[in-house]
Amino acid sequence: MLPIFLKTLPFFLLIGTGWLAVRLRIIPSEAAAWLTKFVFYFALSAMLFRFSSQLDLAELFDARFVAAYLSGSVLIWVIGMAVARRRGLPLDEMAIEAQCCMIGNTGFLGVPMLLVLLGERAVGSVLLVLAIDTIVFSTLITLVIGVARQGRFRLAVIWPALKGVAANPMVVSMLAGLAWGWFRLPMPAALDEYLSILGAAATPGALFAIGASLTGIQLARTGPALWLSFAKLFLHPLAVGIAAFLIFKVEPFAAGVMVAAAALPVAGNVYILAQYFGVGVQRVSSAILISTAASIVTIPLVIHWITQG
Image 1 (cartoon, rainbow, N blue to C red):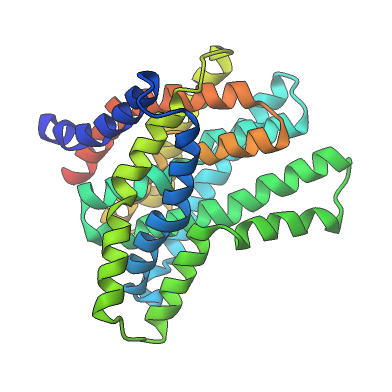
Image 2 (cartoon, rainbow, N blue to C red):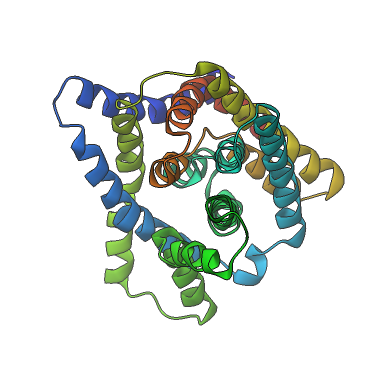
């Protein structure tokens, strides 16, 4: 267990470095937003394109994997909605809390960390989780909030959801990389080196940006935030684990990667959505802070479990 903790510790130290840099005013808090954009549009996109271009599309898609992750995640999404409804929240707040319960920080934390800890064998599974989260659940919450705001379902709410997915650089880079590999296009040495150098900035840049962005979060409404963190760090990996191992019989290593991805803390893009729609901003930000801090302990436990078979 200690070796796994020591392997994960540098990733969280990078997050802490970003937090400390802003707290000490070495860099301004506004820099976190610009660094996030650099990672999101350039470094992480280069990494995802390079990895996905080396994957076989036929081997990447596993129907049992998709069914297991979707069923486990939808269950937690529904539980999140039900708990929020029991507390008397309106539909848009129910949706944002449900999103907190099962959308992990796969892009900025999962991709860099899980690939280092579990090896390149985990690439396909991590990218598949990222694609499902981005395409399915980002579209779902946009539709639900659109219905909540307009009082009924209208075709007009579909366009913003689809537009958001199509404009997401992570989705674009993954699809472009898969297309590159599918058509077996040659990868010039100069282009490969360019993508490698740019993609290498994704890990430190993303983790530093996570830490820097946490400085603007102040704990409030900790009751709901603790519940959301518990659902994300414990219920979500438990649900997808049961679905993967016991129901759909997913290949054990891929199932383990799925559980590790599900055990990641609440994603920062949920906060962006909360800000954009003006709903549940404080409890979402608190859930991100609490779940990220708690994951220093929970993620090594999950990685230890996976590596021990």
